[in-house]
Image 1 (cartoon, helix red, strand yellow):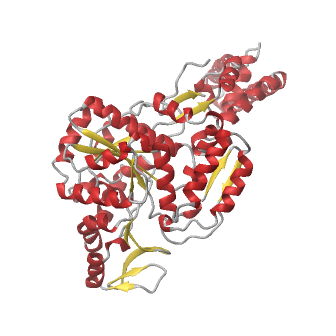
Image 2: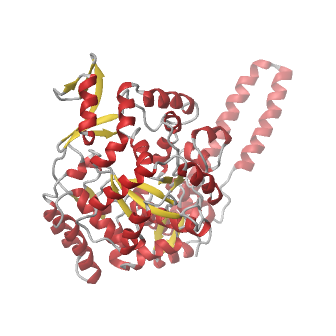
Length: 530
């Protein structure tokens, strides 16, 4: 079986910014606090401990107890919530949307990465406690991004409308989704369990936030995962001074704009700040706050406030203010004793834009860790790769490049005409020299003939390669079929497939295998054979 590994940097699936971050390029150091290594967490612990009020811990613990009041807590999660009162306890956090039935696989990989890192930190720093946290993105309003999941090759979708924060959305219409899922699941013990899990989560809970909490708690509660909903009035109260500053000073716009100007010289910018990076939310409304004509207006509505009115509203109803992508990370770090944020490449890209805003607000900037990425393969698929003499590096390649490379390897003929082209170039260099000594007007004709001859060789090279592909068509087709199985739509498996597809075949051992094999601080894809 293939024994090589694929680094994130060489995989072709990460931006230049993330590759340079992983390579710790010196020019990026000013955009983050500390690079993720076990030894760097000591200084991070000291800094966060000195910059996180004990009073915030009290509010956090009480808020979590209320959020979990209608749920059955595991002993591990209950203990972790209690430990958050202790100044020696810190969190490691990931965040994610409320995707239907967890959405794509990488949601699970995020949470496993968080739990595993807490375990590693406890071994390294036994005098402290480390609590894994999943931040539910309950205030998002991009319903079309989360209302479906893929089971095998079927897209299972929840058809309804939503305009406000998705966490407050009722679960109306999900019984029809369960019917579709049940039909696709078929029979068997694992199928019955998946059906029951979906039914209990979505049909026996009133809101999408509660359904997601139940589901994630069922999957990870035994590992002590703490699930946090930021759409909480007591937690928003802690955020009031920072929201007030955002409304009156608009510092985040200034700071992030300046950072973007520095970053965009080399990299693509992930997000751009607004003058005010806040939404106004109600059950069926989440719209941007804008400052216009000396008033604070709620976009696309008739709601408008003077400065005094909006600051009074903030004091009385902080839950009506929702941070956008620029301010949500600050909110998280204000209310959590957090050391590290674990996210995907896109998330870390926008976090790297935010450090100056954290400094302006005197909040510790967390360590940023790229989540584990995984390729799941069956024994049968691994055996196919072995028979076809394929490495994992090759399977990660662009499909056309892989096709050409293997066609050349399978051929008994040398289809690389580089030697011939170099010989041709040398001959035309001599002809050019002769032309310059006799009549310089011939130089152009010589160059034109050289280009024609080189082009002719390249065309022959392509035609020979095409012929060899026909000869080895069956074997090449098997390679493409295997790659398409592992990389659906020529993209990463983890960005499309849902955990239920693998649970159906491998039940709970699938999750345990993730915990056994993922190493959060590794910088390469984890290949797991199921």
